[in-house]
Length: 157
Image 1: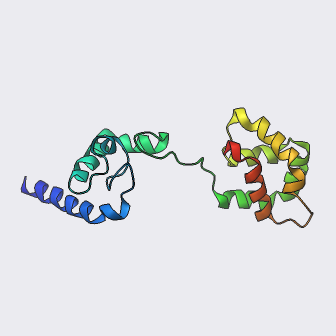
Image 2: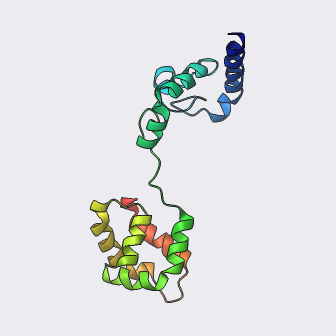
Image 3: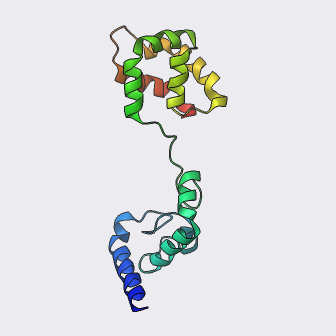
């Protein structure tokens, strides 16, 4: 029992020390989740209870994934590195397919950008309509193309 109390005390002291560094509006050092809904962003030892509630209810993991329980929903996951690699390797085929509004590389592009399936036809049309902006010249760099594609499909990402 004494070891358990020491562990809880150590966690509490640690959380008090970092709470001001990580606390944001809506939740405290324990992070988002059910604990943040119950205990809020009150500073101090109460964050141990919030963290315990989050841990035992598994609400933090669910909240981060779903954007609930004071957890901010993360943007759709596509990494700039993967996108850059793909666009760089497929720049010519993407130019042709964006110009026509269809093709395998274009489908892969919107999939990498996590555009929902039901919005893809609109995204293809937007990219096709914005072709001259996305590819203003034959010497356009992949990074510029990515920025312009991202702007064109921003309503869906």
